[in-house]
Image (tube, rainbow, N blue to C red; front, side, top):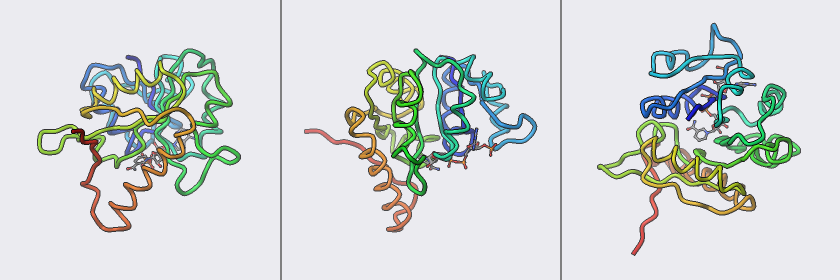
Length: 203
Ligand SMILES: NC(=O)c1ccc[n+]([C@@H]2O[C@H](COP(=O)([O-])OP(=O)(O)OC[C@H]3O[C@@H](n4cnc5c(N)ncnc54)[C@H](OP(=O)(O)O)[C@@H]3O)[C@@H](O)[C@H]2O)c1
């Protein structure tokens, strides 16, 4: 796939790295080509940096991994995105993109893209290495677009996750952010550390 990574920090960098190794073409959409977090990603295979608008034009899949409130500036640079898949990996834990509850809701309202919330429920270290004792941990997703969910599932598997579990439609997007907050609570506030992950077990 041709993937634009908007937000090339902890989360965008981890996923860009794993997807590039799987043979996907990565277009880092950055604000300043000379100086941006994740500039070292340029040594990954199949990876180049472009202004946000140009990265989006090259891609059929977009990952948004920025602070949530950056979405308003990014919206002005997206251009035509109908038919493209946008994966929202943000969490509005500290600040929501007011008046929207989440970036997913903003994108669903302001664009005609296929939107999915995914890659928000665990720490970036787990996105870089999602394998514990030889077992891939789970990723989770929510949203109304089946096409976007199918792409997110493939990209979760390509990143090394064991599976990508469907949390439900757009009415479950906020629950998925609460689920992310549950990981943050355990890892940080309750002191379990960032080397923890969720996996659904079945009988
Ligand atoms: N950290 C985690 O473990 C984790 C886990 C799950 C979800 N999340 C969520 O993922 C998002 C990113 O977190 P992070 O830790 O990866 O952040 P980060 O390392 O601080 O990276 C943020 C990135 O966003 C870019 N950015 C900011 N404003 C932008 C704009 N207007 N246009 C384009 N790019 C812009 C920054 O670019 P510059 O380099 O140019 O400043 C930087 O590359 C947040 O919403 C967070 O809640 C984080």
